[in-house]
Length: 105
Image (tube, rainbow, N blue to C red; front, side):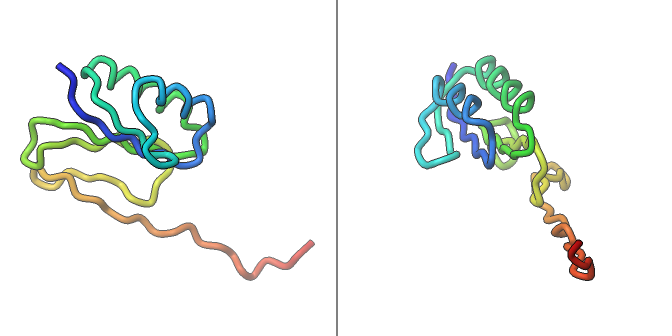
């Protein structure tokens, strides 16, 4: 039985966006929404994780949890989902430090 999913992507290859748009609608750039079976959802997510490269992606789909949904991430992100007593919370990691003391070559 199909269920709704949302995939948000940032800086992913164009061919991945094309593959996602075969099964979902890209409602705004990088945001894909669709209703697919769990099998198709898992295959789409496998394609995302295999090709995300230096980009990032987030999948949100219904799940039998207290919140009613599950979150999966791929790539490097500052926001990391963590389980806290059965609830998925978002932990912010520190921003990468830029060394301003470097002298130009």
